[in-house]
Image (cartoon, rainbow, N blue to C red; front, side, top):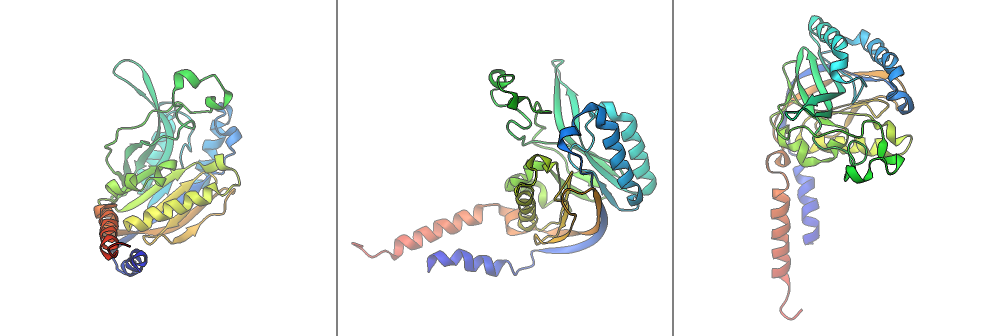
Length: 304
């Protein structure tokens, strides 16, 4: 019977409305469907950028316009003119514009670190640099030993450095957003840290690496779980799927087909308040397990 208590408690708590609605905003999530085999080819960068520009043009009336992780494969300083044009376009339209791109940061010792980042422009503001990097995909553990040893360890853009652990929320049209780049959305505590202070959760990703496996679908399910845990809508923008709008209960409200270029239009709702998980994390679970353990020990008969 004791084993059933967590499940019964979870069922009861799921019926409680922990958060409240506080306004809506329109969003356009752009899915470029760029082939991974050409994505990092310098000769293709102009065509890729034009693909995103063309897809976005009819959607500058949205409150928020989003391009996915590494939508621009140029380094940020190499794309200054483009970013300035997009920034002006967003300001004129009153649209917050968010896009993923790599950047190079010069260090105090004169060295350069490459980073996987998201920039908010137009009627938005802020920079987020990915903190949790993918081993072997974005950095190589024991790099001095392994780099060059096997071709697998020389993947494009596998030399990133992580961003600072403490980073401000993104401003997306006067609303605040927690950003998780790709793999980061699988970490519950990473998202929870700032979720209670945010209006919306966002994640951008390039899941092209997974091909037609179940990987992108599992990745989407993890994003749904982060939305449910924190009582916040999740906006998910990807290169080739699954691009989706997820509500505060983890339900998919809209999505694009995989492996097709397109734009997902919809609305998301600002939520206020906090779920128990957003406030206390795993602490209630730990206390519950401890109490169950004590009850189980107390119920054992002497000599049993």
